[in-house]
Image (cartoon, one colour):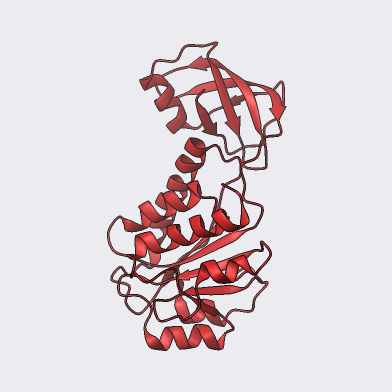
Length: 247
């Protein structure tokens, strides 16, 4: 059954206008009034719905019963990702959402090739938000991962934990230089919220790693092989899910 995010509060019995992008999709696949849909507004759970009316750029749906269905991990993972080049960030965000990440923090690191600011940063943020929505629709999540604006690595690291800038949770720095493994650490720990720090191509510099360690980060390895930036975070999340559950 088609699932769509509807960015407005939903309630049983209401007729809602669907986003233009959803209307266009429904028009392309030629769904007719009366077709069954599933809608979610990001606040939790989902709603059975019926397509009420459709045009080329507009559509409305009658909202039915609420279903208390969730697909979230039992612990919150924030991915603090050093900006990679090209479309790699799209891939990372999409797959991280599928694996259950609760929040994504893009970081401008010293080895980040891509530099985003001003209008360009806003456009990329909006694009990644769309990736999060599409991935959530596809994978069955009814809560959207939070997406923070691009932040400078050192400024973000210096922010007070527990503020809107940085969550108050342990920092795990993924580093090929680490002597302790993520798997070994996780097996000895209860499931818990954490932030995964992943560098861009080439990884974080020694200076950045030292700064993270000084801020209390725990340096952990995910194996004897050096993974690409678009692989590292996803491998770590899958590893945690295999040990702590949630897959």
